[in-house]
Length: 388
View: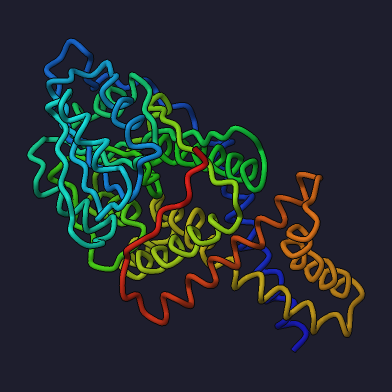
């Protein structure tokens, strides 16, 4: 029995290290720099028409700045149409958009009478929009002047069906979980760029901003969370390339409240497992680049809450027989208490903050899994509270 528990402990620990340490290090170390693409549009070319699709619910704090950032662009304005689906907003969102429509005729506002949910709104807007390329983006993601062009230029190559932006998290301070979240997204973007360099895929576009050909947009099923991941894997399943453009920069305010991020991670976890069962065939053969990336970058990370439980239980039993496992068990118990300790008396040491954040977010993943098993009745969401 002890041998089985030792094996369980080390296998679980290995899988955690594989997704959080070994895979990132391997990708960042051994993915060669990609040669500059020659089959891309220039500003002198006849560029495709673009539809900007935005689902908005009570976004009065950011929607004006968002629209202005889209329109202040190097891309030809005549080729851009902004479609905004207002999900029964009750604040000043609709009025702000109406005021901007008086000045800019390429803004289309579609009001939804009752709460509909982001995925359902985007599905509806995708039917309304006639443009060749869609840019799906959140209301709080702010563009640079060249963001749109840098996304669209890759569509001259017909093998490219989806292009991911380089979203940079910003905040006025490093209070709360801001520093941890900013560090996380920096590493995530580097891994995604490495995946693109090695396999011409990205294991999940960041939903805040990405571009896709209209004919490769796949309507998101009812009650599905993580629409961005669903759409990305659908493109990969069809054998098309997914690009990550480091120069397609945009900015998103980072959450500072652990409570808000906890709720967001629960939604993400639900969507993770929905997508896992929908695209499970991409997990095989395991030696393919797609499967290896899917397992290492995503699936093992989603399963980390269970690996943590396995490590805790197995080391707890083995602690009866071995001092090493007694020490490992006590360390894990201490780490599990970090989120509670941090709420009572916030840590000043960054390492302790990261450990606390790690365990808290894995708790959210576990809760999301339990909600997925119970069954998802709606994908209607409450947006994360804005810092602005």
